[in-house]
Length: 159
Image (cartoon, rainbow, N blue to C red; front, side):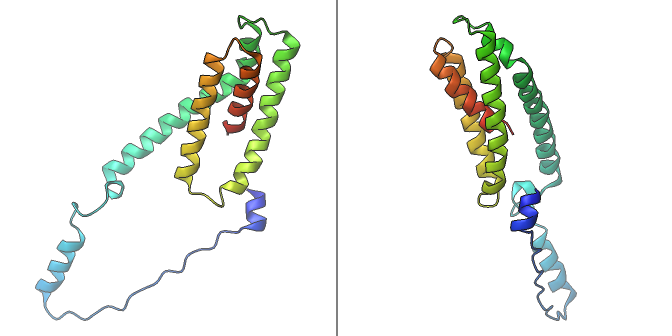
C-alpha cells in the first residue's frame, strides 16, 4: 500500500455535469423520471437486494478463505511430515519456509500487478492457481517434486 501511495497515487475522477435543459411540461418530466427508474434496464448489481446478496457471499467467502489459509500455514508442516512418503521433520520445516517466503514475494508482486489488472481478473487467476496447486498437492502426495511445486504455488497465491 505504501508503494502504491508513493508511485501510483489514486486520482479522483472529475465529475462531469451536463447542463439541464429547461422542460416546460410536467408530463415530460414524469416521463423522463419513469424512463430513468425502469428496473429492467438496470444491471443486476445496481439493485439493493443484489448488493446485499453479493456482500453476504463475499463475507462468507472471505471467512472461509482466511480460515483455510491460516489452517494451511499452521498445520502444513505436520501434514507433510505424516504423508505416506515419510518426509522428515527438517524437510517439512523447509517446505513451510519456502511457502512463507513465496507468500511474502507473492504479496510484493501482487502490489505491482494490482495497478495493472482489474480485481476480478486478479481474483480469478489467484483462485485458479490455488485450485491447481491443491490438486498437485493432493494427487502428487507420493512425489517430493510435486509437493515442492504445489507448496510453492499455494504459498505464492495465499494472500
